[in-house]
Structure formats: C-alpha cells, structure tokens
Image (tube, rainbow, N blue to C red; front, side, top):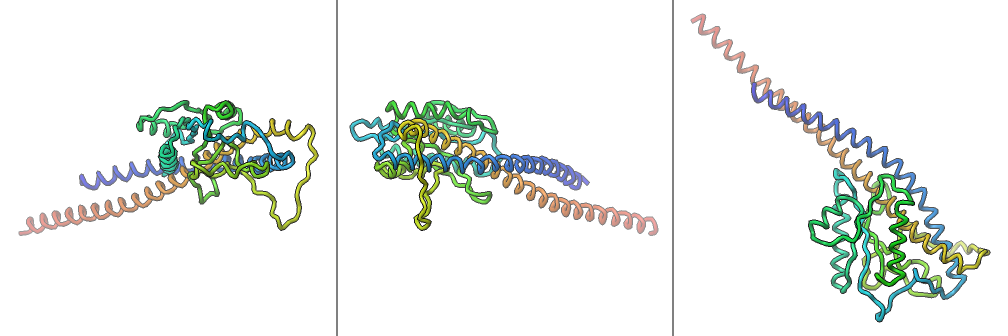
Length: 318
C-alpha cells in the first residue's frame, strides 16, 4: 500500500507542475504574438532609414562623418564596446546559453587580435555569467519587458559619444536574431562604424571585416533594389544631404539597436514557449507512466489480499 500511495503523491506533484508549465506556455505564446507584431512592424522602417542613408551617401560622394570613421593604425585605441543582450528569467531552453557561447567565441577572437573589451550587459543571466567569469562590466543596461525606444536611446547615444570621441574603435551587439518562429540565431553584429553606407559613399567595405570578421551587418539592413528591375529611387533633398546625414546617421544607429532589442525579446518568448511546451508534453508522458505503475501496484496489492483471504478460508475449513 505504501508504494501505491507514493506513486499517487508523485503523480499529483507532476500534474501540478504540468499546470504551471501549461500556464507559462500560454503566457509566453501571448507575449510572443505581441512582440512579433512589434519586431516585424519596425523592420520596414529600419530598412527604409538605411536605404535613405545609402541614397544620401551616394549623392554626396565621399562622405566624412564621425560615425563612418574607420580608425587607422595610428589612432586605434585597441578597445571595443560590446553590448550583450540576455534575459532576466530562465526556463527559456538554450536561449541564454547560445548567446553566451557566441559572445565568448567573439571575445576570444578579439582578445587574440589584441583588443580590449568594454562589456555592457542587458539581463540578469548575462550579468550573473560574466560576474562568475570575473570579467568587469562597464554598465548594466536595464530595460522593460516591452522595451521602448526611449529606454535604449541613452545607451545608443553613449555608444555614439564613445565612438566619435575615439574611446573605442568599434561597437558590437550580441543578441538572438529572430529570423522566423522556427529559426533564431545568436549573432554578434557591428553597430559602429556604420555598415552599408561606406560603399555608397566611396569608402571602405562592410564594417564586419578586419579583426571582427565574426560580426555580421546590423539588424534591419535592407538590400538595395534588384538590378534586374532597372528602377532606382531619385530624391530631392531639403535641407541638403550633409545636414540630413547628420540627422539620419545617429538615427540609424538608434533604430538598429532598438531592432536588436525587439528581435531578442521575440526570440526569448519563442524559446520559452517551445521549452514550456516540451515540459508540458514530458509531464503528460510522466503522468501516463505513473498511472500505469500505480495500476500495476494496485493490481498486485489486490491479488495479495485475495490470496490472503482464500488462505484464511481454507484454514477455517480445514
């Protein structure tokens, strides 16, 4: 009887856990739908801003702007800023692990190239990890679950200030890029110097080359119109292209950083939704297994009791 009671208690505990994981799955699904609308809705704007910047740079020619500065050997500080976006909560599968593994690979690559790292962390999981690694953190960037543009703007402005003043040679962001509901990839993207405008301005190639070869382009960067279409947009600028670039280049940095936060939040909700669904399915399987074990234990107990009754009857009739 004791064995059957233990199985019943364990089955009850698993059922309670299943209720929790099912509820968390439903919450994550609702948050994912809301976050997906925001992430997908802002990408056309981000792409259009970068497209407009490329058109402006092409019309001006050789553009000289602090945000397009590519430090030469003489004025390099050999320091880069790295913002790592992780989650505040766990139970999201391999979400944080994938981001942190990508980050550590990038850090080792940069340190091998002789560059120092200024770490900026978003999320308790990233903070805990780098504290355990005994790596100094310059700043912890706190944002709400539904991140707003005003929350990331001071961080973007600080990166712009550090880069234009020559404190750092480049700025990178490590996050989970949301490709689709079934695919999310941990990436380290180049935030500064701005990528995608140098070619149009007659400058260098993408900012992802050089010592930071592992970095990809910034999120929301749109591709130019296909050459086969034979159509190109023609803009009339008022005020002039130089004044517009002074306004649009910082805006491009801010929107790229904001898009990274939106993609990271959407990827986190997807990971938690999938993880909680897997936990719920495993709980269902465990409940079925425990039910079968309970039935066998109860059947064995009933058989033993019947044998004892029959033995007592035979003893009385003897």
